[in-house]
Length: 144
Length: 144
DNA sequence: TGAAGATAAATGCAATTGCATGAACATGTC
DNA sequence: GACATGTTCATGCAATTGCATTTATCTTCA
Image 1: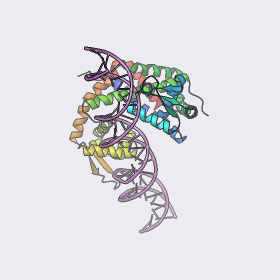
Image 2: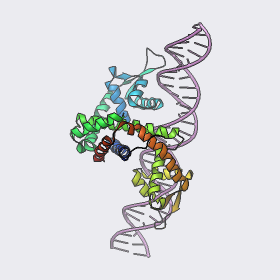
Image 3: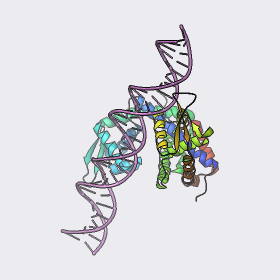
Image 4: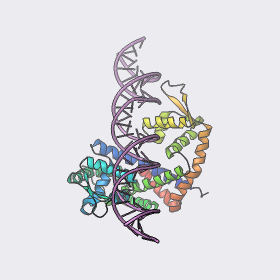
């Protein structure tokens, strides 16, 4: 059997799960109250908007977002349904496709950022100095 | 509009969400592979096992676990179904009830901890000193 | 007392997720 | 070329979640 985690490790783990879930729920709530779709839509739109030509293979999107394959497929369904993205046939691989962000998608992403950034500032920025944030970031990075 | 979050804050937020989701998925996976139910079952069993007489009102459980009311109700359904907990009528409030952990519930909680603690050690303990963990814990605590 | 409002818990229904599989195409090997 | 294997993406189905509402009981206050 592996060694048991120390008190410190266990406490850090418990806090990590608890705090993240609380903050995420709060941020999602802020988005919803502002009439926006879930954060996962934002994440996808951001990834697409940053990609070359505003398009990505679903497989890429999946890797960026750390989502299961079927989850990506359905997220793209919804984005497409809402007119925020489009599926395009992939010229170099008959199995695959490209997902391209639309102008409406770009617009929504920018509008959501206003609310999203406000939520981050309120729930995180207001409670941590930049120095603390950098430190937190570093510690989390070691866990990745 | 609120101030925009700094680079540091934004990066910390992104890392927090990303790292926690990754680690949590990994730990859940470890539990599942060992043939155990989800972490939420463990959390509930732990709360119950620590409570006076091994029982809690659903409302209490809900507050401890930060879950919505209906979610708690259904979690208790499943625990009861599996013989890990029992619903008892509440003598002091006719609306309410008590949820009591069974011996099987206590046994499962202990068995799950073997696997769970191993996963924590592997995914967190192996990557952070106790000092780092304490610091992480502190930083997260300020966000709560 | 009794009516109004608050609280505890369950549940119907729609949306979402997870899992397993399927269909279409690609790649490597002989 | 043809078969075996791997990759990409979609989807049927069951389980879970979220939301709104219902039922039952409690509390308050006139």
